Amino acid sequence: MKDIGLRVRDADAQADRPEGAAVGGATTLGDVLAVLRRQWLPLVLLTLLGLMAGAVHHVTTPKQYYVAATVLVDERPVALDQEITASIPFARNDTSLLNEMQVLRSLQLATEVARRLDLHNEDVFIFPPSSLARDIISGTKGTLTGLISSDAAEETQVASDPAADEARRLRGAAAKLQRDIRISRIGMSFSIEISYIGHDPALAADVVNTYATAYLDDGLNANVESTERTTAWMRNRLAELEETSAAVLAEAAAMRRTEPENVMELRELAQRAATLDALYQTLSARYAQMSLQGSFPVSNGRILTESLVPRTAALPKLWRTLSVMGLLGLMAGFLLAVLREMRERGFRVSSDIHTHTDHAFLGHLPQIEPKSAASGTPQRQVPTQFLWAVDMPQSTFAETLRNIHATVALGATDGLGRVLAVTSMLPGEGATTLAVNYANMLAASGARTMLIDLGATDAGLREALNLPGSAGLIDVLHSKAQVSDALQRLDATGLDILPAGTGRRQPVAADIVYQRHLRALVQELRNHYDHIVLDTPALGTTADVKAMLGLLDRIVLVCEWGQTPRSLVTRYLAQEPDVSQKVLGIALNKVNMAKLARYARPGWPESYLQPNAHNA
Image 1 (cartoon, helix red, strand yellow):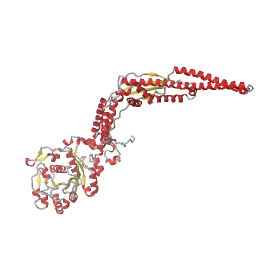
Image 2 (tube, one colour):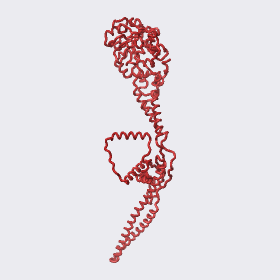
Image 3 (cartoon, one colour):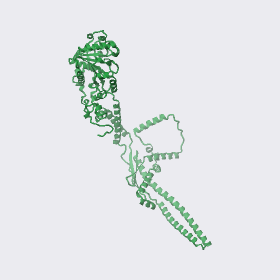
Image 4 (tube, one colour):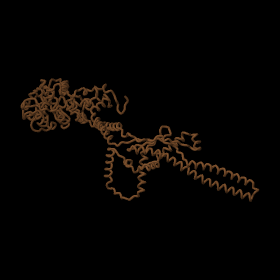
């Protein structure tokens, strides 16, 4: 398929490759379908809104009636015109027809029609009813104009002459009629259609019929005026010829008396007198013919069809209004969808991870709604969201954690316990939920697992897991308590937990003693545990994870689905290559599984995930 605004390629053939490599930056048909899947709501809503607006506009728009009359231009040229027409008939006739159309479009003819029908006193013509939309627009425009020109000087009331006011209103009505009337040629014929659209069907029919009649009357009047001007000129010419002929005859008579021997001049005078007499006779005959023609003028056209009063309205057309408004609504929905897509800044699918970070995608962690039910004794109840992977082993959440564990296990070759840090870019993205569920899943499988809270205060895991107050990591590192005294165990899974401890500590990056003792503690714990999971602060708010890189084997980075800015993660990993090398991969948390497939191309893994898989 050719490129039309976007390059369309086969999305299925590249489904197993990163987006950048698959399509080379091109927008594929799969991308368009994915956008339609996730943006269908604004498209449908705005289209329906457009259709509803179209229906309201149709109901509130006054009816308009179309009328038309046809006039045939039947020109009868004079002899000279016939000679010219014989040489260039089509050019001459077309020009004459165009001239007649200009007569129909003239303000003079519109004024005559307005005068005959008294249109300047017809309210339905001068102030036609308008639609609700036009009223709203006009009202808004008037309000804005009033606000802008509120300081303008008030107009003075001047008494006007009634006759002058009548003439002014007649000119206004004629100008409006000239603007609204439509004059068109029918095909290549010499027929002219006069059409008009009005709110009053009877008045509209009268307008076009009067227009046709006024046009023919104007032609008759033009012929009469032309004949009168011609006959007036002929009368003057005949008088001049008569005077000249009399003068020639008088001169000839005088010469006969005084110079009878001057035969040549007498002959010339006689010939001149005869010529003038012949010209007089010819012009006199033509004058009589013109006078007779002026008494019986002949029209240059005739009315072929007159308009009847229409019974059904021509406008508004429901299908046209709905089509236009529906299309406008669809365009508005498309614009809103584009704006919403432009605002998309978070990670949605695995290809986003591959493209923007060049790290492995560890899986989707569906949104878990906290429930009142809990596991454990009444005194040590653990909220169900922290035991989700254990209680729901077939869920997508648990499968993602097993994928993380399998990826971690691929690098375990020295036989010691693996130290895994779980962190996020920003607070509140669910790193603690993942760390606790992952540790509980490992402990429930029989692995010796410890979860260490590296938060700044004791308000982290202790409150989240309803642990009893006691010593913690801070106390152990400052030699205020033994490890055995600070450990807490979850009865449901056998997970050992080392809370943060009482009091507030300095950031790890600023506490050298803390770092040294923590390194020694972790090294000792490696000998006693198969897995050590560290719940660390967010990367974007502290430098603690960077200060502890020597302790860590790998880092699992948690990003909130659709919320964590891609640019933030990309810039941080590019600016911190040491941290980036330790990152095992990125998991997307709080995923809305019902909406996930909307962001996937056909054939991508996300398109096959079941919306209720996290509840399985």
